[in-house]
Image 1 (tube, one colour):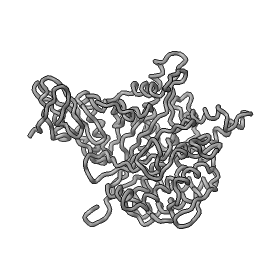
Image 2 (image 1 turned 180 degrees about the vertical axis):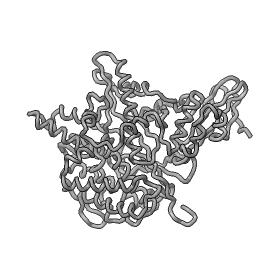
Image 3 (image 1 turned 90 degrees about the vertical axis):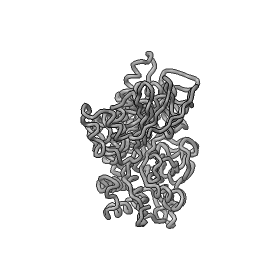
Image 4 (image 1 turned 120 degrees about the vertical axis):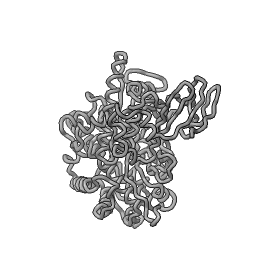
Amino acid sequence: MKKDNRPELLPKIVGADIEIGNFLLGEFLPQGTGAEASKLLLRHIAGTPGSAFGTLKYDPQDFGRKWLSNGSCCYIDLEHLEICLPEVRSAWDFTAAFHAQLRIVQAALHNASATLQPGVSLQALACNSDGLGSSWGSHLNFLISRSCFENIFHFRLDMLLWLASYQACSSLITGQGKVGAERASERVDYQLSQRADFFEEVVGLQTTFSRPIINCRNEALCGIDAKYARFHHISCDSNLIHTANILKVGIMQILLAMVESENTQIKPSLMLKQPLLAFRTFSHDLDFTIKHKTLGDEDLTALELQWRFFDAASSFVSAGGCEEMVPRAAEIINLWGDTLERLAARDWETLSRRLDWVLKRSLLTEIMNETPGLTWESPEIKQLDLLYGSLNPQEGLYWAMEGAGYVDLPVSDSQVQRFVHEPPSDTRAYTRAHLLRKFGSEVVAVDWDKVCIRQSSDIFRRIRTAKLDDPAGSARAQNGGLFKNRNKISPLAILKVLAPCQDVITVHGKSHAPHTMEDTSYYYASDVFRSEPRR
């Protein structure tokens, strides 16, 4: 909290870690082909290893991490390729960065496929369920203040229930759509969310079992600065349509800004008594008729609850509550309100250009109408459900619709292509990316909040750590001058500015890995040496 006791307000910077569905078609392995498929994809993505020394322990949830020149990273998580976006400030930049990452995966898919034997094809899908009981994540990460985190999870549990209630009705906007139901859920032909059937708790730390609507992981990825925290949002789907991504991210930015500001609109009339049950049943309700009771003792449909959140958020934005926190907040509000109006009017033609679940349903319905004998139970329809998110441009239904002009593209092709190669200019991703480019093989370790760089001599091996604790800092405005004139500013001069502290390691001709990135003073191998800070 600030000295005047007002809440600390931070820009709602956002990132994401999104798993890709991957497998080899035409090849059989007893344990499945996910591991081989993910390794093939990762092998064909160029990047800097997270540690030049490797790791002593295999982690199936974080294997082979590479950092890319656009400030992002990718790795293997439980046999899925996982793509992580660089930190961005706006929902529009998020959409551009996400589609840029998909293009990187598409290039890897193309190159890896050329190495396969005839009859075997590599499949990569931007979806969240295989339709057979397995689900994988599409997680968003938002910067919040430490006091906001403490309020949500310790002191103001009304805030937690308020956010959980929004998640329960959010599939109207964020769902990719799915044929059928899983995990013993009530049978349906089609539902809004790919993920709702897999959530079993309201709040919890876990992400791969007994999934909670609100994840309470306390991992800021911002060094040891007590000012920052991260809201890890795990209940949404992977969206391909631009507008759905803008709304998914932009609305959450506004709602978290309201929570961080301790806004008075956080009321019982917006809190469901059973948000977990509502999340599942709202996802199954394509007619928006199922109602759930709020703490204010009202019965509301998902659409009615969305309108309640919209009204509260609209008042907050109109009063200037999102200034310097959420870029283009008024545009997000206008787009949200118009989309809700079209949902109320069942304007499916317009909505199919904005929302994935509407577009997918219209495509599958048209195919069934034109093909006698096909039903929602047909294997062909379930296959097309998966192919909607295929990253193969020749197979993916979404890419066919985008190419034919059937979806809105508020983010231009040039904006997407820029993020394939360049980092955002207004977050710490800018400096991370440029350090990787500048120092290349001299980078010995990378994480979201630091880059460790090696300097060598015959006697000493020095490691300097550039700390990137502030997600909003180390942007082009602060550090652009260091990288603009590459030939005029020496690498050592850059390091003295960005990484003024260094350790001196006596290595006797051998290089040893740091015990952790937090403590570069300990090295282990057959001969371990303690370093002393250079003064």
